[in-house]
Length: 207
Image (tube, rainbow, N blue to C red; front, side, top):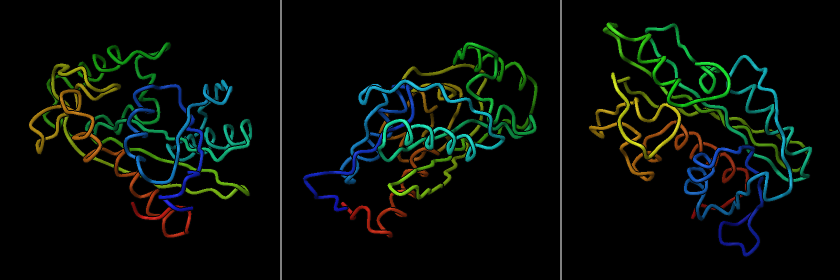
């Protein structure tokens, strides 16, 4: 599949999160892959994330969306691990403070648990799973490191972006532009690793 083809590879991105969709569309721009949301292809799935790892959950979502749509499917499972908390919240990141998922409540709980803790180190982890025609599966992971600050700052992102501080930026991901974030983020690292695998295997060409 050529990045310059007039018929890009149409791939359903297994998410209803508009922030993730915007991030991934920017990351896959000019890659030869046309990302569409489940709603755009008439699908609404609620896949139970019963895996014990980010990779397992990403595969569950990608497999379900590929089966439901007949299209190649891409799914991510991502979250934050705080080193001093035994890698909490981990795979429970989206629902750390309970149901329904609430970014502000999750951030407040994380801040409260780290109050008075000297080690503020944290990492974002992103696992990507892609199910291709014929059932072939590719998985990759991306990671970025930073630290948790004591208050929410910035409204540009979602999830834990407003409390995740990067020293090289001098601000949180919530204060960064989408381009600045994607250049450093776990999601950006995973997307670049996936595109490299696809290019190596002939599905896309370098832009």
